[in-house]
Every structure is written in structure tokens, then in C-alpha cells.
Amino acid sequence: MTQHMKFQTGHTQLIFLKTKSFILQKKFLLEVEKLKQLNYEIFFFFLTISLFLSCASTSKSLYYWGNYENTFYQKVNKPGDETTQKHIEEIKSIIEKANKNNTKYKVGPGIYAELGYYMLAKGNSEEANSYFAKEISLFPESTTTTKFISK
Image 1 (tube, one colour):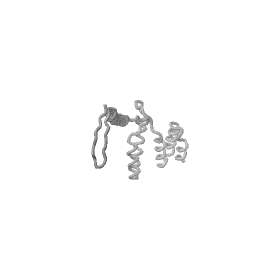
Image 2: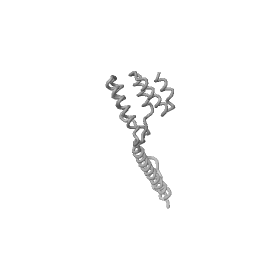
Image 3: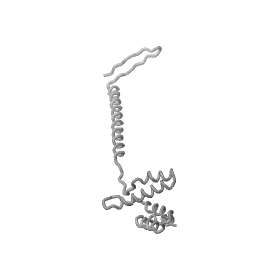
Image 4: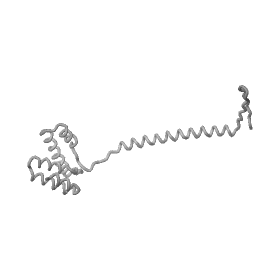
């Protein structure tokens, strides 16, 4: 079934042919657009869920760091005997807590070497060497750096 519609505009006469296939094609295109919109919505929904789930997961550390970051920051930003001593005490606290039998975390890499460095700077070379040896035994890959620091 074909319908002819005539429109008069100025000097031209337009004949617009409306067929069932044209109407069906138009409806089909509208449905495709709706599906595209729905696909975008589904995509963004799953993207949002993925982002929330990835942010919710936290990584567990193998090492116990205590308050190392804060005391080191204070030592660097306000250099002096007081902040250095607080940092040394924090390092000793980290070692003590990590070495407890009920703690599942280990002393982090570089902790023993740093404490050894501070002991060497204070003139306690025997104590420093024991910390350097402990660092090398726990983290053999730090041997070169630890030996360089210990000189």
C-alpha cells in the first residue's frame, strides 16, 4: 500500500512517498538508537561498579612499617636531634613489634640498614655492624648498598 502526498511550495511540487517499508525502517532505526542508549547505560553501570570494587580492595603489606613515614617526614622537614631521635625510636619500635611471635609482618627492607647508619653516625660501630649484617641476611639484594653505607 503506497500513499502519495503532494505539497505545493513555490514553483516546485514535492511528492513524498510514504511506504510501509519506510515506516518500518524508521521504527527499526529508533529501536536501534534505544538499544545503543541502553548499551551505554549498561556499560557505564558496570564501569562504575568496577571502579567501586577496585577502590574497595586494599592491598595487604608484607612488612610492618609502624609510624615510619610520619617520623621520617618530621626528621626531613624539621632536622635536628629531637626529630632524628624520635625516628630512631620508631625504627626500634618497628623492629620490636615485627619480631614478636604473634606478628605476621616482617621488618621492611632498609630498616636495619637505616638504623645501622644512625648508630654508625653516633659512633656505635659494633651495634651498627650488627644491624648491617641483619639487613644483609634478610635482604641479600641490599648487600652492595649496605656495604657502601657502612663505610
